[in-house]
Image (cartoon, rainbow, N blue to C red; front, side):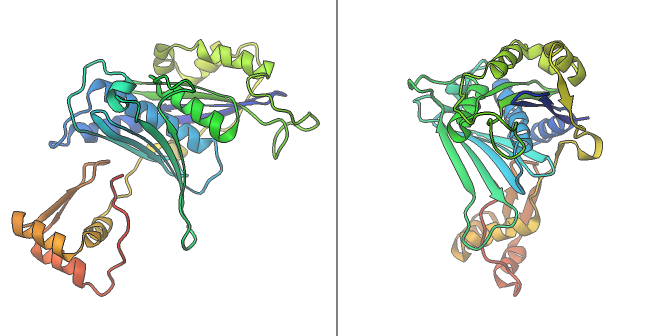
Length: 325
């Protein structure tokens, strides 16, 4: 079963989380492989999507936010867009859209950042948005301070966290066809709610010796270890000299799990947003409107009568954004 663990280091301004997605990740891959229109992900895309899913769970678990966290990577390569979305209850979904051929060992830049135009966006979409309220979105390029291409997702997200929160963060991410996993360590601000009292509130970016020591340990974790070892073993091997305080894990009923928010009603509203003329032209050309959800593979079929009802139903809702990002 998938699981998420949170922990802190006793007396130190450092917190951590580790996630292992097993059944949730395997369900995402199974649905994609069963989609006759797309087929299974190529290996480098599978690894990217798995790492994004693990990272999105860690980032959702790192904030107190009643809404969806959406992690997107997009750019000018054969992977047009890759998306991982995690709800506050850790239900998640992920997908990627390919528009060209991909080398078997493609790097991140070869997938989405061929000409250094790639971007990473993190969107926080509140469940109870006020009228006119827009989701918060932060966007960073897929290159470093010297415009060098970043080739690992963890490098992109560490750069994002440093820019957006001014907090040192280290991430280790890995995915194969069975497990998507991630380990996050972050330096806490010295002063603030729920942080260590009685210490000077100074800028310690890159300077806190306790965080730096723990970060070195985390970066020693190998991909194979993250994918194959259980959480207890990983924490014991890395931090056997540290005082680690662990919280009740999110496992079983509270564990991260696959879930998709698509529905026939949402698809109907998407068709309404196209307008009558566009819907009629699709009907005239094909005799029906078929829409497939990129996240879960569910197919929605609308014949001419169904399509007409979308625009004549007295309780029809105003158009909303499409279900596919």
